[in-house]
Image: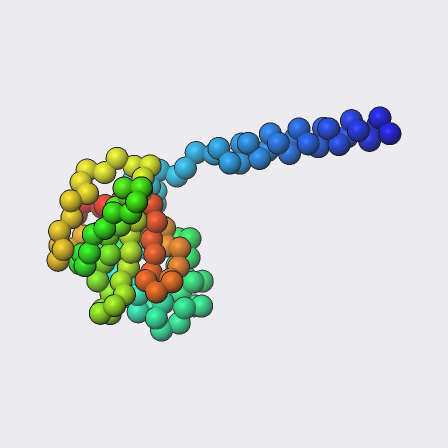
Amino acid sequence: MKKYLKYILLLTVVGGVGFYFYSNKPHKNMTKAAVEMQLSSIQLFADFENNEEEANGKYLDKIMEVSGKVKEISLDEEGRTSITLESGSEMFGVICQLDNLTKHARTNFKEGEEIKLKGICTGVLMDVILVRCVEIKA
C-alpha cells in the first residue's frame, strides 16, 4: 500500500508541475509573429458565408493579415478595443479585438479609414472574429 502511495504522490507532483508550466507559458508576441496569409475583410467574410466548414479548415487558428475599411470601433467593459471592418454585409463584419498584451501605437481609429491588422482567426458567430490583433503599418 505504501508503495502505491509513493507513485500516486509522484504522479500528482509531476502533473501539477506540468500544468503550472503549461498554463504559464509565454504568449506569442503578435507584433513579431509571422503572417500565414493575407486577404481583405470582404474576402474573409465571403469565404465564411459561402462555406463555413471549408473556411474553418482554411483560416481557424491562423495568424492572418486582414485589410479593410473601419466600420465601427467599440470598447468592452474591460476597456478592450474592438474594430469592426466592413464585410460587404449591412449587418455583419469582421471584428478585430486588439491584443491586450501589446502596447499599441494608436487606438483612435476613424470610421471609413483603411487599415491592416494582424490577428488570429477564431471563426464566425454572426461576424468573423479575430483576436490578439495589432495594426500593421503600411
